[in-house]
Amino acid sequence: MTDLQAAAEQWQTRGWVLVHDLVPVDDIDLAVNELWELFPTPDEYHSGSSAASTRFETESTDDRYRPTDNRAAFEEAPSGELSFRARQFLGLVMFPYSSMLLNRLHIHPNIVSFAQLAMEETDLRLYQARTWGKYTGVTDYGQPFHQDRNHSIVPDRLEKGWWNMEGFLYLSDVEDGVGATEILGSGSTLPIAKPISASGKRGSFLAYRPDIWHRGVNLTRPGGARFIMSTSFRHAGHEWIGFDSFQQHSNRGPWSKFAASCSPEELALFGAPLPGHPYWTPELVDAFEERYRGIDASPWRKRLPL
Image (cartoon, rainbow, N blue to C red):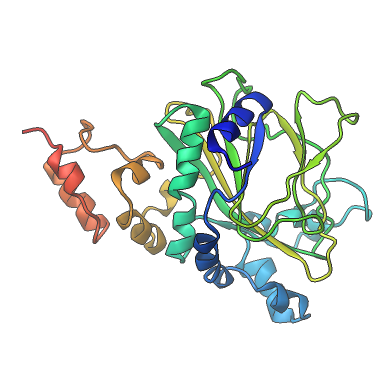
């Protein structure tokens, strides 16, 4: 759906929603021009080029999923068997990227506004940010239906006000044949319920709660590929929920350039204290400007105590 109020209500009541056209296609296409700094294009990968295949499996992959000498971790299950395979997680690239346009898609104002609307909270934290590329033939991507129970160190509380939002921003058209996620819904009885294919054009945003049964689907289209961004939010005080750590990147060039482009509200999504917070002193604002050259620190400076 495209009606944001109705979409927010569906997320609240049914646990998931696919918001079509949440991010304008022009914004997606402009950023995707820089996606190929992280991944080989589908044509390059499917050309049979060993260089493109090697780049995908090594350079374009989070260290935790790169092939190692321990090949047992990358052995394939029998074809057609639904299982979690290590190779399904190749092609995960962690935020921040060398591309400013891709970095800023994670905090696109339309996504943040929708998360605030659906979660009925303005003080949110972005706790997961990564890009995931898949290509037909890398592996069988078919997974069993599951709930994501690895986002919280305690059982999920599923009342209004306690939810976190997991989200996939579609960077490419995600259609049947190229791995559109299948959804069963909240409280569905397995395997009776009929799955729904969350297929959508680039710029669509699939938002779901942790109680939703879902699964990854194999890519079957010849020459196919799928690219999405994982972009997930939690309430500011819910420290038991988490996935990616951003502090470890805070002294790296990509993060520094990204942070310098952010408003106070955007940096607050990562936990930075807002202007007026007792954390800030004149010396700390000076150090802030020194760390992130080019940042507009005036909002913080104006709110310093007299």
